Length: 254
Ligand code: SAH
Image 1 (cartoon, helix red, strand yellow):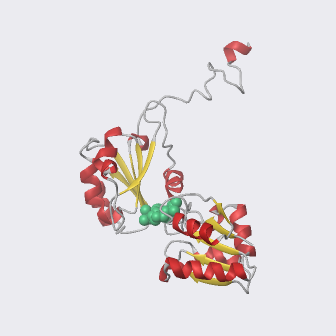
Image 2 (cartoon, rainbow, N blue to C red):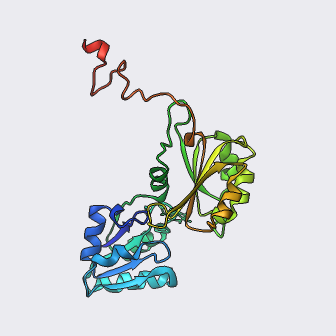
Image 3 (tube, rainbow, N blue to C red):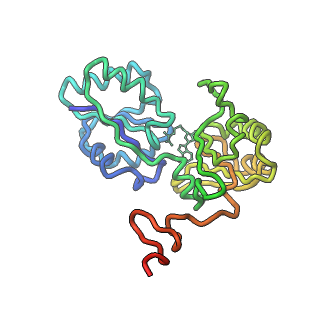
């Protein structure tokens, strides 16, 4: 038997993958990140499945539970919010399993930064606006390398998704304002895809007050950049005068 790291998606229980849900249905042991994973996702678990919230556990305790279950030939689901490769702290778990010779597999999930774009109905990569999305955070208990300080990343004026930082919104704005103009659009989405989702849209000049007014203090994504509200060029992919591997241009085929 294996340990499966499952991306639970951003919250909406229908936004887990078919594969991820199948593992939760079959698992004998489920360890989930209780602070963010929607518990409704675990409703499909077997009655006899053992379920633990990792919020109150150490890395060693999580690993010990996994090791015990695997030695009893049980299926383990380690459920992380969004996609586990982004601020999921799964590398240390995978490396420890590797050392113990325990097999594991990762099932990706819908990250909250893409659920946020869906909620806002915006595309991060608009032609002639930006072709880059930067995923980052402000320093918290985990430090951020000096070359990646927010004001340095801001130089690109790309689309940015800033995790784990809404409680420091003033600092976020201060750093961004070093490189983006004050009227740059910025949005904050709390609990994207949940029933009680909240969102505020403004500019660098107005967003901090709006976040305060809406009482958004955690579980929120900050996205900034002109992609939120600007003129852009149409995609070449669907341009009638442009042909590519799968489609001849109208002018050529006529
Ligand atoms: N692996 C997760 C991120 C975990 S870090 C992912 O891929 O989404 C936790 C941070 O993710 C939160 O502080 C918040 O910034 C963001 N987050 C998680 N779920 C969210 C949601 N539903 N809506 C908005 N932001 C969310």
